Length: 317
Ligand SMILES: Cc1cc2nc3c(=O)[nH]c(=O)nc-3n(C[C@H](O)[C@H](O)[C@H](O)COP(=O)(O)O)c2cc1C
Image (tube, rainbow, N blue to C red; front, side, top):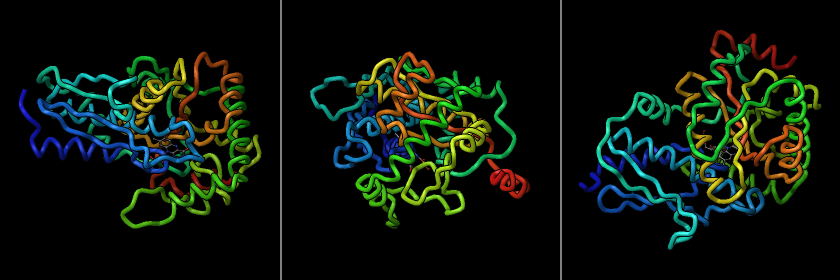
């Protein structure tokens, strides 16, 4: 098998850099091997002890990066083969990728790859038009990552459960000083460094604030439920809650997000509320989940310039 070219390495590295990650920590590093092999390692120096004491979000982030990496390799004409490392020689190695040979990328690969650089976290309201049920179904089935279920959160009862737990998590996290200190450290403006920008003050309210800070407004539960009703909400779920589940959840979340981007939708991923223990339990019980919730995805249509005024009027309703 031939060796990596400089150009191929650049394509793979750019795809990885464009992946979403918890607090934009980018907790991964790559090692390229002979014969088009590559390993993805997690970076413990990017740990978030308050937000993510178990490293769950770090591995979900690595899973999202892995999905981008595989997509880039397929678009380069390679047929990658992945071994997720449960207990490899190096405990930091998340995945080792080899190639079976050359293969033409599929149309879906090309479509999703072109979405890699367009995908961004959308922390603001969506346009008033809702995502159609058929389009939502496409998203629910967009990922074929084994061992991961992507399911819609829909209907009055489910939205009520979600609004209740999101509100509870927000109130708990807003009060947690050590948590907020860590969040601020990662979100303070540092040119050129990893980090995540704060939502504009007007939008610093749930659900569109994305990350709850000290100053985030928490609407009452019925208001939050009314806002959530307008969104396409998907829950990424795994049968177990171990490291491999987290990596796979990240892969599935990212392929779903790329499918949504390719379909012209915008969205964001939330795990912050799931870090509050009783929120996970509340979701498992309230939604009768057979597995463990790993991430919530919110999608909608972007607000176009023409629609901006009307939609922002509706926002405040
Ligand atoms: C595991 C994981 C958890 C995340 N949790 C949240 C969250 O709770 N709220 C949020 O607004 N964004 C969340 N994000 C999005 C990241 O903040 C975002 O990907 C990162 O800042 C990079 O920005 P981008 O998505 O625009 O490229 C999460 C991303 C990942 C991968």
